[in-house]
Amino acid sequence: MAEIKAIVYESNTGFTKEYAELLSEIIGIPAIPTIDNSMFYGEREPVIFLGWVCAGKINGFRMARLKFNPVIIAGVGMTPQSDKYAFALAQQNNIDVPFYYLQGGIHRERLKGFYKMMFRLVVRPVLRKARKGKSELSEYEKQMVDLIKNGGSFVKRENLNDLIAKYRELAEILRQS
Ligand SMILES: Cc1cc2nc3c(=O)[nH]c(=O)nc-3n(C[C@H](O)[C@H](O)[C@H](O)COP(=O)(O)O)c2cc1C
Image 1 (cartoon, rainbow, N blue to C red):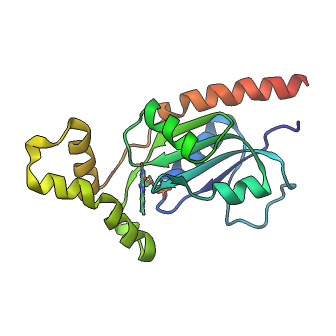
Image 2 (cartoon, protein in one colour):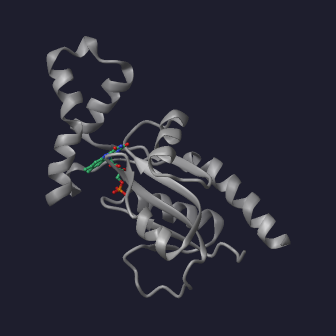
């Protein structure tokens, strides 16, 4: 297999882009948005793919899988960092290569049109529960309500640690083969 030469990403409000650029800085390979068609890159080449999570789906992943060979994948969502959530996302999206979940955040002011409307639907159940009584909310739900209402960023360099370790391991194997 050829070397991994790019990080391909799909971002709507900027958090996935931030992670892709941070990763690019650390491992020294370029971060390229999926909408960039001027890619120097050949078809079906191995890439790291990062996509934002939309109602449980990793956005851009279907196209990326057709065009490239994603060997490491990450989903960026608002859900707090959790191995359980990472496992569920990998299953839901039929991912059979190393997968990582990274907490991004919420930029409500950057949500437009269809996604703005869809976001309201996605968060409605937890907001409804919050209106009924805050004391009934779990700690996790309280965090989510605060994030949904006030927005915020949870992008952290350390969230990328496991992904970077896997990249280095794979890059070493590819270098030796
Ligand atoms: C319509 C919509 C659906 C979403 N669904 C989920 C979801 O299922 N799980 C999750 O963790 N985050 C969900 N989010 C939150 C985004 O994944 C989160 O804001 C992410 O950081 C966006 O990344 P981006 O800035 O690169 O677009 C959703 C956001 C929108 C707008």
